[in-house]
Amino acid sequence: MTIKKVKEGWKVDFRVGGANGKRYRKTCKSKAEAERYQKFVEAQHTTTGKPWEPKPSDPRRLSELAQLWKDHAGLKLKDFDARSRKLDNIIDSLGNPVASQLKPETFNAYLSSKLKNGRSKATVNKDIVMLGAVYNNLKKLGIIDYENPVGIIKKMKLDHRELTFLSLSEISKLLKILDDMGEHDTRLISEICLNTGARWGEAENLNKKMIRENKLTFTSTKNGKNRSIPVSESFFTCIKKYSTNSKSNYTFNPEPPRSRMDVFADAIKLAKIELPAGQNTHVLRHTFASHFIINGGNILSLMRILDHSDISITMRYAHLAKDHFIDAIKFNPLKESGQ
View 1 (cartoon, rainbow, N blue to C red):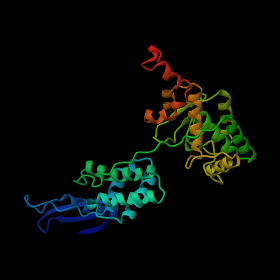
View 2 (cartoon, rainbow, N blue to C red):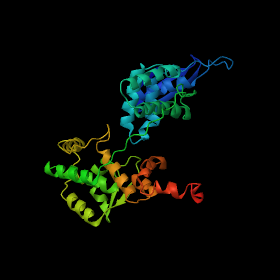
View 3 (cartoon, rainbow, N blue to C red):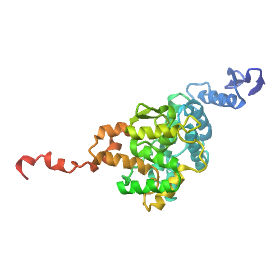
View 4 (tube, rainbow, N blue to C red):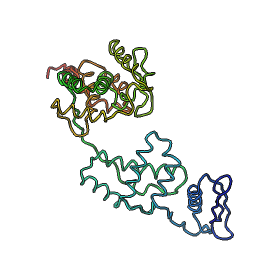
């Protein structure tokens, strides 16, 4: 192999299959890219030159496949950095095996150890999806020629999590505590979530240009799509006035002296409100959705407001509808017979 620095970048020049094999030359932006290119080409050379000979196994380590996935697919994702870190952690925990030889039992043992150490089923499922995405995407791109070796391992069924929501009295108490703490940013972000069902990050990153026509438009959304939610005229005026004091493009200082989520957690404790593990600020979104249905809101409208991709997620709130149980009497198959 010859990789050398040239004016245009790094030039790789090599033959595959011996001295008489096909010659490959390419100029890359970096030495690392040149090395990856050579390994990629060599892996594609799957025979010894004799069609009747069996293909050699792919020798690349899982870390090499992970880098190829990052270069070809991962960088296109909005949450690339978080996924990249998660993937690196999985690879370290597995001991960076030869990717084509990873055994289902090895990966399953890793998942079981995470469960024993207190990680949730949802977290473990994310690891299954993450590793599967690497193999499946690279297979589609033709970078590997074998199926996901751990594809036999399926996601675990999740128990329905308790969706706690705040009562009207708890909402008033919480907002007053935030006022008393002098945490006006955190209070207003909380109110935005309660008025629109927005996720905390969407509300905290509200661009002040997106406050117009009595609507709040959220751009930092989970699926990358903008979402506009109308609010009352009085609340719109309050936010608009508050945002004019901001010196940046955002309604709230993007670099607060202390995490507002931590401030919110302190207020929850002071209000003596008990929440299930992991809910913290997300209770505001649950509170909006729960009261929306309790007050007679339509489940399909709620789905669009909350930006859910699947109606089954929104249906978690359906049991709160006032007519939920009355409908069982009105529409059951024996209603006419009086049974």
